[in-house]
Image (cartoon, rainbow over all chains, first blue to last red; front, side, top):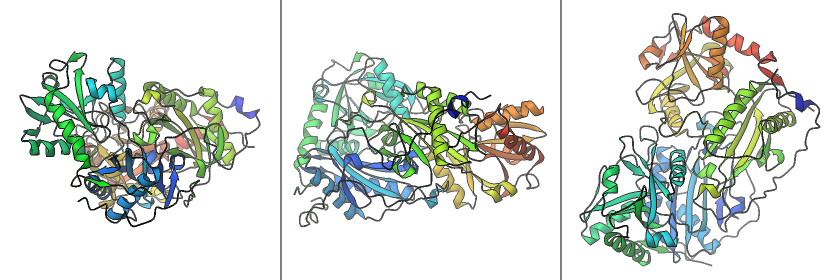
Length: 320
Length: 320
């Protein structure tokens, strides 16, 4: 007989509560959902939402630095393109979403914030297996700014390991739809920790370097920049590097980057809305060139942060 | 200047509520989280949980039919193997989880239930990017039984379309860890709807048939059964078909199934905890054989449901 029966019969059934008492604590911030602005402790998704049960969702993340959004328009563009590709609709247009994000940040009071807009497929009251019967749900939140690299790592460069995990290919999930499919990246991260590294890069289907958990990667060799072209998120910070290179007269291309080519680089850096441009000085335990943050990386990092005060690239949050 | 600034400055900021007022309705059922048994409306995950933001979670689903769990031990085995592979720990052993599932069902009163146990990576209070700092979270719930195929479809067979979407390959996400990475399947489902079908099958990386949204597929040809071997969830209902075939003296193998071979089958059926063994009688608008539910499928369907009363295969829920 199935062993799970016996113990059960003798115990009285537990009681059912009315409302969840949440023992967890949450970062300080403000969320928007169902027309309400709320503390982060209230920002939750039903376990029956397709966004959770099927990772059927898209999102975008923008940051606020010194009280200013950076390139918000580009993030809104990508978010609305993702919604369309997933056939999701929300009762807000671009200006509405921009207003909501501004409000989340303003109400949070954070001058440096990590700001996310997201939409899940939702759920139907009957828990239908037909996604067309679900009601799409938009949410947004602003929490304190976070970075892939901490202050020390930004100074001396990240120590990275290359995992043999393969980034989910475009034939399965279109990377231009920013998505939460990250188990490949999470497992790559554990591979990296096992090898004493601080973060990971994983591969594309041809064995070339793809990307890491939440970031793109650039190689600098003989003054020229390259970054993987296929199967990677078209990151806004990645794009910003191309824009900065154009301004600076540096050559940057999207092209295959082999593991060997990356390790033989003069400089390596990674890019993310969570941290900007961040140097890498060690891969798989060996230094990149002399193991110091390179001059091209430093120059781009400085320019990147300067642009955060430029009204062409950024917009002021109106705090109450 | 970034257009998103102007409208903002003139409006007063909205107010922040204390507690989310949830306008959505949920199916009738009972969930377990943080040591509490609660109605389904309370079963929620923080948007900051890695289980949501990175689909960093594993789960298993078992059903209850006529007040009895079906093959609960096999589902518990798979769930605990998934936890280990993802390096997650929960403060419950197998017997504890079995007790919790029993309680959810008993308290729900459902005699036919869809029962899920799940664990997310969790989140850290600081929203750290290091998954090792997250506190893993176990949840479970029981809602009314649901089926991939409704009563009419079970009678006449499902109408399926084969999408060109490729199931996320094992080199990216190990399918033996039951996971929520489903955007490939969801988009395949929309492809199928566009073509007038009721559900979808998607492909493996070699262009053979892989699986559908929540189900495995079997081909019957000349009295022999085959089902895709690689890149698919090792489903418990799929395994049950092998067990039933062994009892019945039918030959069943796991092997590549090409699209052409599937369409040329004598019979096709799909298997899922959500519905059991379900006939398919039309693929891409063309009938399978004579377009009627076949004799092998019917025989296995009958046997499958008979086993639900057999104490070797099932265990009684003790309702209060």
